[in-house]
Length: 298
Image (cartoon, rainbow, N blue to C red):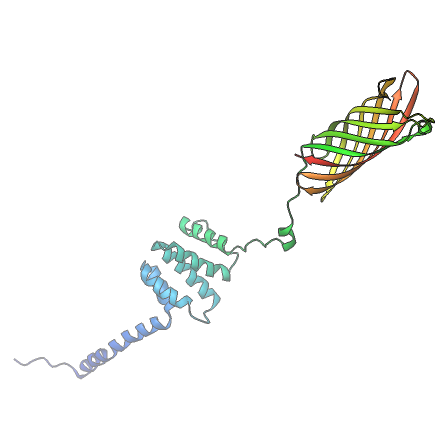
């Protein structure tokens, strides 16, 4: 038998296929290496996430990649990382995506893991709050108004009106306590003692006065300086010691200013005009007290 003979054209075609097939395969591989983004997208479509991470990561690291292609690559890279359980790497890819598109919004049907990773990337990208100015940081906290204040004062009491013709100005001592109802309103009580010599010739006696009062007032602070104003009502008992004495209705008025030395101690000045009414005698006497003292703030 004679062996069948192949035609010359068929032999030439087979030879050409054998020569060019490896070259075509090498060309496809070279194309994938030349465009790793397309190759990575194909790996993603084939659910080969490890391949997609490798190729898309290399593609997104390239310089000069078109913004639209870079956004697509980063989005698929983040999804591939999540599919492999690599959440931190996915958040890092989404951070890069937010740099390109700050207002990025995912469709409602996007996987919950991807939505959560995007929210985490937004939180990390949010700018830190601006630090407070140095002056504000250094400013001490405002001192709270003291609920209780105890004070001790000393000074002089001046006799006014017709009584000044018979009585001399004299010393005074006072003690008081006040309670804060709120940051502005305070109520208080106090005692005050004073002494006035008799101006009659060769009369060495003196009139002593003891007053007790209840009052209400307003008080506030501007930095270390405190201001107060108040009105009181009480009784005033006065007379020559071991001799005649009288009792009247006492209406003291108070104006004060003080300075905070430390948190619990204040130094103050007070001006206290007062009126003593004697209903039985249908007359009144007026005095003006000027004093300095210390207040213990609790």
